[in-house]
Length: 357
Image (tube, rainbow, N blue to C red):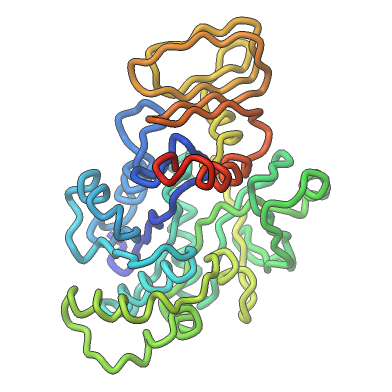
């Protein structure tokens, strides 16, 4: 087994691009969207437990979700669950988790993953993750695992390939997060761009350079940390002052040139409704359903319905729509903008109140 290789699963977000199925009290990572009996978080854990020592897998999550993590992954020890005192972006979360692992293993190499991905081609996935971990052990650079940009998706980030390196790797020339459609089309047509999967790898020494900038006071703390309680007290003091910065920006826009590896495994970021629709098996008219007792579609095409268990629906006359019901909230909207649900939550919060988020 790869005893010095570790995984950090980032599971602290609210997931508002999948609202209203993803709610404040139960975000997307804790939901079984595919009806397989495993949530997105559990599927992510399973994926990495098959290729890394299970004791080397860590979950970074927000304090409000600690019990959900424990309920869904009861095999984890206290040390493997890192509780963020406030919700910031993925950069500080990954930095703290990397620091936490470094205290225990200064030879560690780490792969960090979001909890909302659909991966196919698992043999290729295991092989390419192993190759990437070996690369960062030797190179001491950030490595982004990416796949070919096949269609102009505005919900994804795009990495431009620079100088060619060995092993299907390239220097990162540029990074563009969620571009407008016309830019995405240009990127795909050029053949120079890859989709950013959000899977990043590094040796602990590489991320150490970012600790103090991302979480002021963490490195130079005047506290000896020897227990989980002492570490949580240190984080409670330092973490609220952390820089709000995505891991993508840390790895791809930092001072040290990053490297991107073009991978062959199948990948989808299922963190938004348009992509979720594409990931599901639809009927002959392109309609798909999540949950519910059943849906009767009439004169309807390319529409996604998300319902609580036991609820049925009849849907007529829609084209490329989303209909999502969860608890006290129903959303009916064209399913053509990955960010629309997140933007709508602002108005909902003002007009209806926090209980509808």
